[in-house]
Length: 91
Image (tube, rainbow, N blue to C red; front, side, top):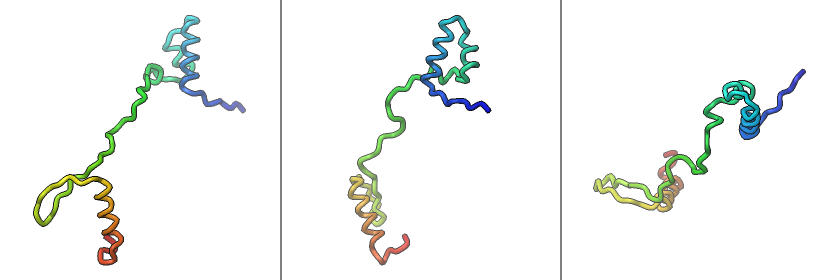
């Protein structure tokens, strides 16, 4: 029984460069290593993707209809107070 070792992307890239320098086409190197073109050419940017976390939340007062910006810590504190209030249980 043959067990195949898992090879990292970096190791596969090194093998592709080695085989290519010996005269094999890149297509053949990809077939041998099992690596796809997009994996070979991918360059990590080092930046985190996605939206940065906010520091404030827009809050609309239902009674007046006014909208105000509140710091997230203050807003979370309001939510915790509501959750801990026995009159507002299970909300």
